[in-house]
Length: 212
Image 1 (cartoon, rainbow, N blue to C red):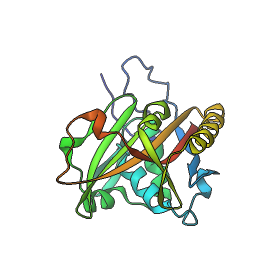
Image 2 (tube, rainbow, N blue to C red):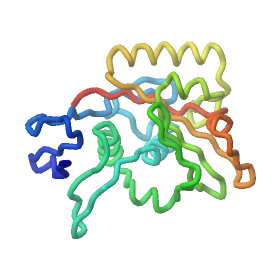
Image 3 (cartoon, rainbow, N blue to C red):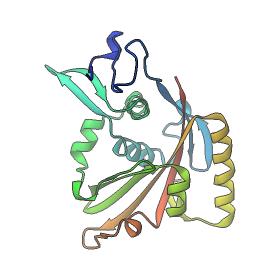
Image 4 (cartoon, helix red, strand yellow):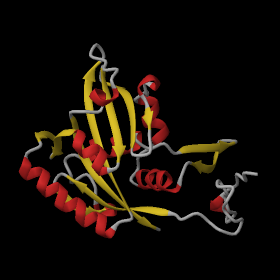
């Protein structure tokens, strides 16, 4: 039987029926961020990066962790440990997931969750923003641009080579690396084909995670 209790109170949460009661799941932390053409420790990424606001809001909206409240008190974060790590990282940076999601509503009809790719669509300033987070091999091939200093720059062979070098270095150090990308479309230009929908994206960042 699934036990659903609170790890923050030193009690183990068991989501996997094959997991022993005394075996805690591996916890993760966000370790490295590649943003604006620079690789930094996650804690050092801040407002000095011109793309910081776009990156942090996109990361918040790409996160599928859910907060469970009881009597207006947070009791648990529901999702796998990597989603929890992203939630805690954005929270520590001062970004309120519930508030952002209330301001930028999700279009549920255009949400996709697969093993290698997660896609959500949000209404921002009368446009629809597609936000995707997934494995670099799956997402980078769908990107035609890269976000540099808050500008959308066409992805050239030189840029791709530089990003790929950073990615390989991150893979050697981190246990998991995600790519994060966005794309804006008008409400009248709805694309129903998934491949076309998640194509011509702009690479925002690479996120490296390690065991906590």
